[in-house]
Amino acid sequence: MAINYEHVMSLTSKDQEFSYGDRETMLYALGIGLGADPMDKTELAFVYENGLKTIPTMATVIAWGAGRVGDTGINYAMVVHGEQRLTMHKPLPSAATILADSRFVDCLDKGAGKGAVLISETTIRDKKDGSPLCTLTSSIFARADGGFGGPSEGGPALHAIPDRAPDLEVDIPTSPDQALIYRLSGDRNPLHADPDFAKMVGFPRPILHGLCTYGLTCRAVLQAYCDMDPTRIQSHDVRFSAPVFPGETVSVQLWRDGDVVSFEARVKSRDAVVIRNGKTVLAG
Image (cartoon, rainbow, N blue to C red; front, side, top):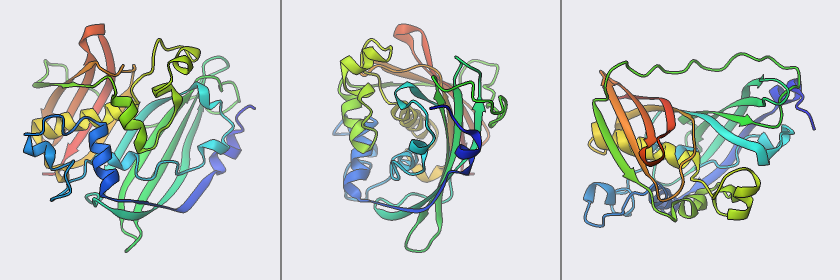
């Protein structure tokens, strides 16, 4: 079924309710590889209920399924994540009941055979007082759904990486079972677990979730510039450019200019850049 531009842009949802507890908070942290060293107390704080901290990028899973992507008519088997942006309004609690309001802000037609880009915005609020916790802006690339006659240009501008050598580089290894752990936080797409399905859609084996790689880059910023204090992160934006296979090491290159951290991530063993145009804004 072809995309109907007016229909997609009319799709909204309000006050979708979700709840999570310390178990989900710890599971997310384990899913992005925190706690691998049981003697590292800075990481233990994210996987142990005594003084539990939350990673800002957990915002991408606490309202998993919010919005109405399923009503757009796209071929979901041919979808990949394009960009992810996160703005924090206040630190995420380690447990909460939340409300999610979602809408589409763009639906771009790249042409027949070239795909479509759908950009959605979700604001997450704390149910107990209605205060906003964060705003998520996500773009998905629907590879099989171009040619519907919508606008071809739009979307937020990409962040430019500084034209100098990186100030720092942080290597983060992933485990062979990383995707199997991460998927328990919400994204059960078989692309990340089933070898036969992965081959059917064009990958040699299951790939790591893009949002897991997103969490890894947040870990790198926290480690490099925040002394693992998640309240220092005000926003965290990326563009996905290539998949990571579980078991690979992700090398995050970082540049700091005042309160802005720019970053890219690559898998050196394959000479593959997996995250481009990364930008984090730190609290002053």
